Image 1 (spheres, one colour):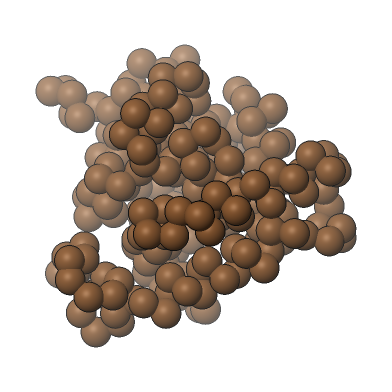
Image 2 (cartoon, one colour; image 1 turned 90 degrees about the vertical axis):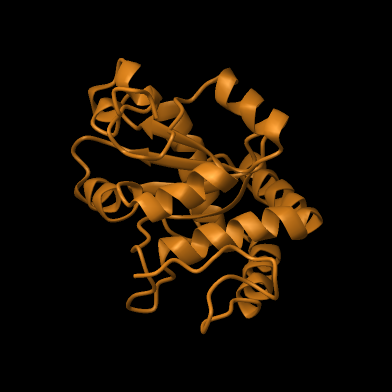
Length: 214
């Protein structure tokens, strides 16, 4: 965060992206620099795609991305990239297909977790800040995806490769074709979630990310 309290989106041409410039998340715009940073630091990418007209995008911004504790997790373990759907419909189209292949869902906000070379290994749409109505909360998803990238890298890479293969086989993927990535993704998530410590927080035994006080 700059001395003015702004993240790098303060300099964006997109009015939608500039609405997030006060968030504590150190957002990057889509581009070579962000991917080069992910490769250099060997971190996964958190991709958020939204639009100024998207109600749930603003809800997720308010609930999660403006939360300092959530931002701390993101800044520590991910290279976050925020995309204006109306500015980059090409990016949106491809990752909508990827998230549909993974979860059967689509729409905005689009939330995707990518390898440093841009291949998606998990994704969804709106995640509440905490587990709610059968949906995993953003904190849990973030820690699960960070841990999976660190400790289950082969499975992450296999999942990402399968998702890309599905998209390339049918660029207009509509959810009705066989999905070679679903089983791998389900195994990855189930395995990681089994390690979640619901009493003390985090995953597995020490060391693990400290549990934040409410």
